[in-house]
Image 1 (cartoon, one colour):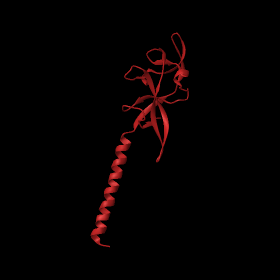
Image 2 (cartoon, rainbow, N blue to C red):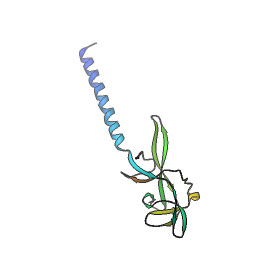
Image 3 (cartoon, rainbow, N blue to C red):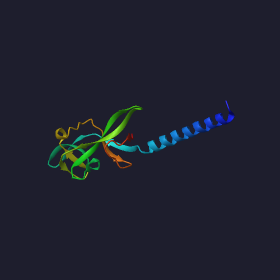
Image 4 (tube, rainbow, N blue to C red):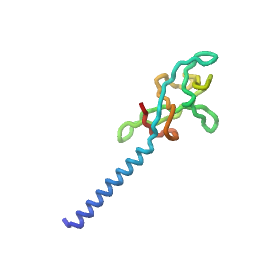
Length: 131
């Protein structure tokens, strides 16, 4: 083989390696780091409710309340964590907790709910759960 051809081939593969590294770096920077909690039974005036932290509750453009849940999504590269929106009905609220209708929202006590994220989330955003 020609030395120029081998040199060009080496440059090509080096460039491909750099492009893959850069793409991986920027893809990883799009993943949000999140803190989570689960639904807990709490006392709120006037009774006991299944509650989530007020910090976990968001409002959409129509004023409806929702939380982000952690879900596992299968991809060709394996499983990845994403967030999904789940609408909730708030029955009672104080400074720290919002009492919700657990049955009406189809939430389970074992669901992981996003409380805090280091970047803005949307339906399907890739996330990493912090310990």
